[in-house]
View 1: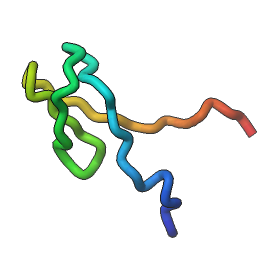
View 2: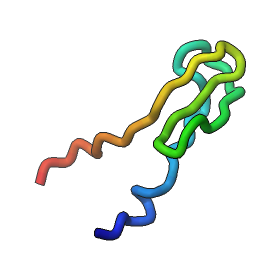
View 3: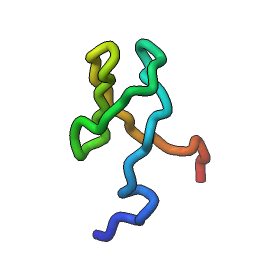
Length: 53
């Protein structure tokens, strides 16, 4: 099974969802991010577009 290019790319957050700072770095290959300001980690996941076919 081949993963489409758009699904394989990492979603990049613009700011930390906890403190609002923009000092983020990738944490893991599975979508994890770490905020250097508040020292919290979070993960982004694409759930879908909401379009029902």
